[in-house]
Amino acid sequence: MMTVDELVAMARRDNASDIHLVCGIPPKYRVDGQLENMSEEVLDMDDCFELAKWLAKDGWEEYNRVGELDAADTFAGNRCRIHIFRQQGIPSVALRLLQDKIPDLSKLGLPAAAMNLTGLHKGIVLVTGETGSGKSTTLAALLDYINHHTKAHIVTLEDPVEYVYTPDQCAINQREVGKDTQSFASGLRASLREDPNVILIGEMRDRDTIETAITAAETGHLVFGTLHTGSASDSIDRMVQVFPEGMQIQIRLQLSMCLQAVLTQQLVQRKGGGRVLACEMMIVTDAIRNLIRGGNTPQIANAIATSAALGGQTMDQALVRLARGGQITREVAMHYAHDPAYVKKNAL
Image 1 (cartoon, rainbow, N blue to C red):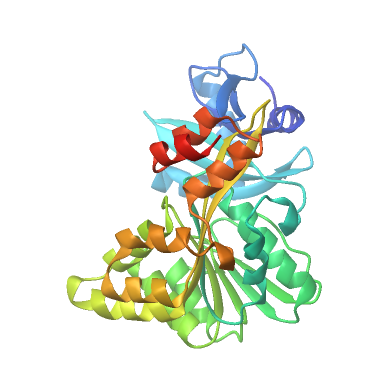
Image 2 (cartoon, one colour):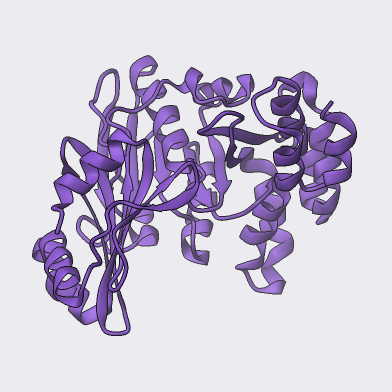
């Protein structure tokens, strides 16, 4: 059986993003979005228990009690996010390889206007998308740019801590949910007493966290957070809908005043191999604030499409640009589009 260090070294060599260790099949890794075998050796139950126990370390008792465990560690010189979970009584493992260093914000393929988000002093900025779409990397690049260019205090709330920052111009406190604080919501409430300028919330997953994030933004803090949503309008609806119906009008009003921008990401197949970032960017204009207040979120996509002068773009516009630039095929662009007919017509 290959060791974890050997598996990670092989995955890093082949530019894989994830490793999956499951009983009854060989170790697999995800290369360019597709799962491939790492060897022909099939993992048995003893292998899975041994690997999981070694990865869990002091968290093995928690895994046995709860049935899953999140952690982070470094193997073969590469920091990884670890998720151990039980299936049919046997441990399985998913490892996400993180980049060795936080990438330069200007090299991620984000819209040019994304750089302006680092100069904000208050409000909420969301980075959204499905699992594996690069949200953590984008947030890390945004915060690291602030770290190198602004004298501020950054507090992060993560589950687990993924990228580790080296403080430069900023004081940085990275708090891990479950170890340093009980939950995102409790850590966020505490952070308001820690004199932060910038707060990162690893996931805005419940009403308490979202409500406190809005309060933090309203009281002069810059809040970065993530949601698993596929568009800016979906993100607004998701945040509003966690509240009871009687509170939703008030929450829409508050969001309309404190939301600054939403980046929605997809990683799509690059022509010739690899993947490339397609990114929708909603910059919250007065027109969009009115749509948020009025609950007219289906009209937001049109408002984004007409905000190009400010740097906004829809996901379909981003895909069209990538296709016209020869980075992806028209077929790939249509596959990932919200409106395939629009992309087919314009991605020439």
